[in-house]
Image 1 (spheres, helix red, strand yellow):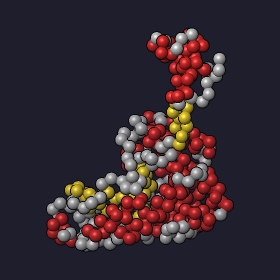
Image 2 (image 1 turned 135 degrees about the vertical axis):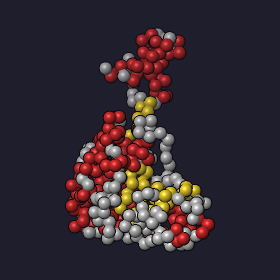
Image 3 (image 1 turned 120 degrees about the vertical axis):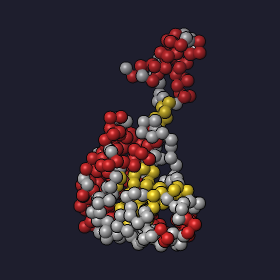
Image 4 (image 1 turned 30 degrees about the horizontal axis):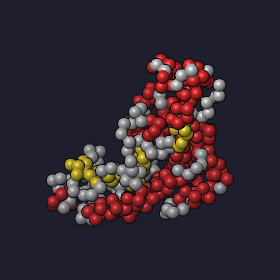
Amino acid sequence: MKQPGDLYIYKEGTLYDKLKGFLWGKEVKGEIGLEIETEVKVLEDYPKDYRAIIGNGDFGLPYWSSHRDGSLRNFGIEYVLKSPLDYKDIPDALFAFGSWAKNVKFLPDPVKCSDHVHLNFMNASARTLGNFLTLYLLYENLLIKYSGPNRFSNMFCLPMKDAEDNLNNIVQILEIVKNRDRSLKGLIPEENCKYSCLNTAAFHRYGSLEIRCFRGETDTKEIRKWIDIVYALYSFAKRKVYPSDIIEMYFSNPQELFWSVFSTTVLTNDNSLVRPNLWYAGKVAYYFSPREWDELSVIKTLNTKRVSEQRETISKDRFLKEFSDLGPRGQKWVDWYITEGINT
């Protein structure tokens, strides 16, 4: 009897394809989520019409909602995008916020405030996730330096060098992607990583990774520069390379890799800040081989046309009948034989 050919169609799939129903429910679109934490000296620093409604969700501004944040001082309010946006739509959202915020006397760079960027990985492949984590860990100290002088070793956004246990959280994410092991789901509690520079708990809750290191900025021009830097990592991570390639690019020419990632941004390089994080980046980059990264990034679905052909062939060879003429038990056996039995 003729052996079946490949019964499957292989295509690059997303993490949502792999983890839906296990880790996440509804799929979330949009690439970027943004939270802007603010403080004012007195409530009267807000326009009179907003004093009663600010911090209670929707306050009439396109794209944005506002929420009171008990971790902040001085009438602390967090402004959050109502839903994630694609990178191309971020300028419109920032323009809306900036046009409104110019009438508010926000305190400049309060010590407890920061701007948080969420990058959505539901619609990315496992390889993209690995590339991003490798790049982020490699360049984390540069990102923190750019974020402001009070951000190094800040207790609200601890870098990897000060919170090394967060590397274990990253490894747990990789294991979840590989094994879909339900016993791993509770091993990244929010209280263990919420105040890391890279909040890995957001991956479980929202399908995102949250970068928390940028200062509490309300100037939308500065926020845009920061988003450009973070998105440069995200964009490079989508290239057809493997995490291990990134490490090899670094060893080959550190400056060339930096410019390949950040050439369209205002970030400047300082290899004395990059090299100390090479071990962390390598831990992720070599956690899987290129072949394993490929396997994790591919979704396998049955080729229905090929299955139908094999059903008829096997039915006639084994039972001298067409598949439609077999009873339920016979049809079930044929389907089992096609997908499993022929390889046993």
